[in-house]
Image 1 (cartoon, rainbow, N blue to C red):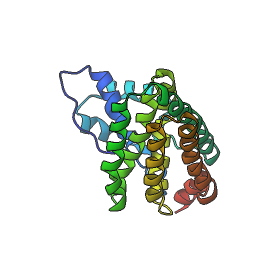
Image 2 (cartoon, rainbow, N blue to C red):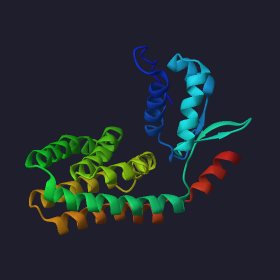
Image 3 (tube, rainbow, N blue to C red):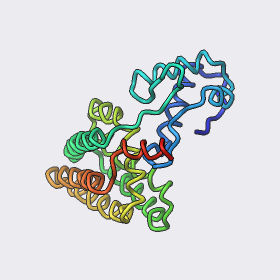
Image 4 (cartoon, one colour):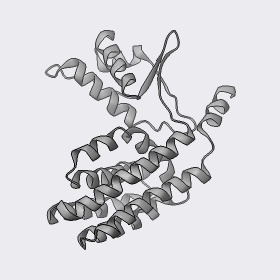
Length: 233
């Protein structure tokens, strides 16, 4: 995990928290070779802060379910079990499907146009196999739909799933040419929003996310088996 020094003109403990959260979200935690242990000394050195604000930020991240602090063992990023991942995908499908339905009624033409621009701008990164760039664009696409709903509670609820959904989508996009399929699905969703067809937009968003659910359920080994494999070498 790479971190940048903290700017001195910002509230230190909040900025440390923001930087750590952003860095953890950017980790590919469901990659089989992912290192989930966080080195406090290295983090403090990279951020150029003392251990006190760092530990305050880590405590906050633990309370929010991002990390686990194990006495005498260290700090570890939390990785969900396969069953928990599948439940999160279902929850995200429900939240974003409702967001798409609401967006049909409240989103401006300009917002939908911007969504189309975003999708078109990043479809090339999928075609060119720049999956790291497309992964970021992909999750941003879904966040834009949540924001377009005009319902802050929906977006806030989805934010609680964000870190793991980001990592799950990132890994899945690398498998079975799912990135190319994602581009096609996104354009269909945009067309439904442009047509102001609430039923179709909600259905397409739900089906898009549930295809991820089906892929993960059938193609992934359990996270526990990955962890055992790594532990035994």
